[in-house]
Length: 414
Image 1 (cartoon, rainbow, N blue to C red):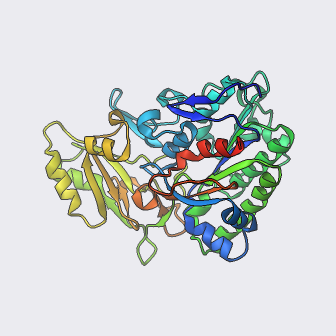
Image 2: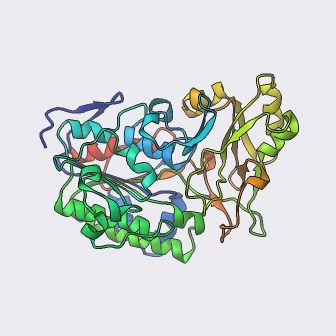
Image 3: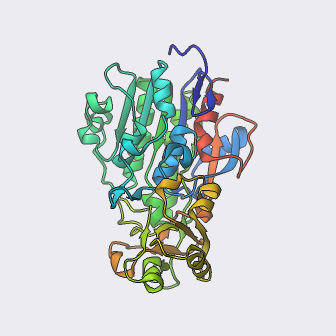
């Protein structure tokens, strides 16, 4: 690596790593998952890291969804800087609801592109392909200094577009099903192989929350997942990397006693209050992978007609049991560090055990085989932040999950 001086990225200074700096984003990792697995003796490596390294809790960004938090980790900044404030948005310029996974939505350079441009070797491995383009923005793959591929599309990765030809064949693992724990295992296995054989300077491993949506911390399937992760973590640690383990968000049960989803259908309420179709409720959790959450999360935004009384709508929302926050766009920009041009006039958040939906007839919940577990609100904002080096760190709310690379690189520079 030929980096001559520390790098400034989005207003933060990153040191020159002497060993590989790795950030691992365990999608949906409510801290209780780690506690349960460690209590059963299934995560000896992480237990040791907690004891001799650094063990903290941090806050994710709101909404506590995948895309906003992964891009915050990738840029070291909140959504009002990088612009990605959901998995999904309403584009008022076009009148269309679209996925927010196109590079055109990204407003800030990533830590990865800055390190690459400075001469470093960068590796990014994602579980789902929806994040790959955003995380790999501005990387080039013609000089064997960048790799960015997903487990989901690992059969079809190419040297020119991903830096790795047919990643599944290279790894010796079949391309996993998208709804599986194996999708995340592929990420860990690829990270171990890259560290051993290619030795990147900076590496990001980010998983899927399929397991966490389906299983609670004390469930055997969840414990098995974290036992598997710990085996790969041990290998990364043994090779001398400086590692930060964090998450994009937590995960809470959001269902009734009979197992049916607990949902407030806000579009139906808006239709009742303002007239059918006068308001448009947007659920930023929406993505192509709705089997495990049915597009139900704890954060929503609403676009209102010009003559709507915003304060009246907010007052009505706050009288509904389960709605913990209802605020104007300006208040949400200030409190949650959101880009104001990408949210509606109203922002709302629901509590720990309840979700926000649009209209009851719009959600196909037939694929939900287990009681709903989901995220998006402030009750899913607390995430683990564990470093395999001893560092003097604050805890939440000062410590954020998007500090991951700042401290991973700091540890790697020691």
